[in-house]
Image (cartoon, one colour):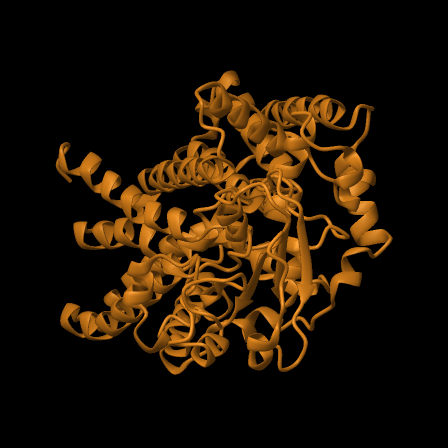
Length: 498
């Protein structure tokens, strides 16, 4: 790859992921907001601790990512970037850059495993373009940051693993790798499973000298010790948040109160639509080929325990398995190379690859442009309003958690406006013409896509959160945007009444 072409290629990848960072606002799970940004907001003195979630009161969340957010937000404020929507966009862009750099670092460490330029280029493309990556690795989430940092440690260790030359690791290098794995653990405690899997592989196949174990473990403890100090900064007392986390979720069973699913739930979630079923089943077959043919590979020993434990844990969410997805491009390419060896026909290989590439391409576009929950965008519009009371009619749980003051509303985005949230009753849209509102209150209603059809021609939306180019691309809703197609309509006197 040309020296000039590589930076331009990585820049192009960054720009592609930046579109996703711009479109996918809000959060993919509430933890992304309430346990990072609101914690940072508390330390910035902008909200009281009573407005934080129960995880803060129980001291179970690590402080490292709220501390990272605190530093970045304070810096942005210092350079006059104080709009919360601009700030979170920058946090997402930083996360995108982190993923691209770490994924490329992993590519450099593993590319020599492929004997030809064809498979090296294929691996390079897959490194960034697996369809789930804009969602799983383009966010300021603990899953993404923990995964990226873990990859730095793994990529730093892999060249020595490959050459079976661990004895040449110097003291600083071994200590640094331990620190990196410790930081990954601090961003998301579940990365301990990946650390354990790699450590078990080293114990069985490579590393038997206690000196290197002690060095890496010492580095790990240094990072964990720094995490304890950060926890004191966040909570104002000495706590072991990791111990509290595992006690609350595994012993006390708090996680199970948010729902319990059967072990095969993750597999069920991947099955939707004929085209995606073909793609995901094909990806699953490539994963199985890798795990069987490369059962002595360290990635197998990282991947399998992580999946097994998450399959066994009752409470399941797709984001829980995001940290290991960064290994998928290598696994796919390794399996394709093995298939190529067996069939000895590059043309036949391409015949199977092209449909998968096309489906993955469309899925990549859809994933890049499909917000999971853009309900916080309503506050972007509220910031443009005069200083009057605001009343918003809505339905759906997403706006319940966004608007109602009785829950932990996202205060990070809120400004001075007093908002009263009211649920729409059945038939509300049909009776809008008879609804009387006070001129002293700015009154709005949130309509979903079907409700918008009912008022089409009678009124125009006053705010549309979805970018116009996304609407244009989404012909016949092929991207399944669903909830995020809501629009805001005014119930005060306008040129056209509802």
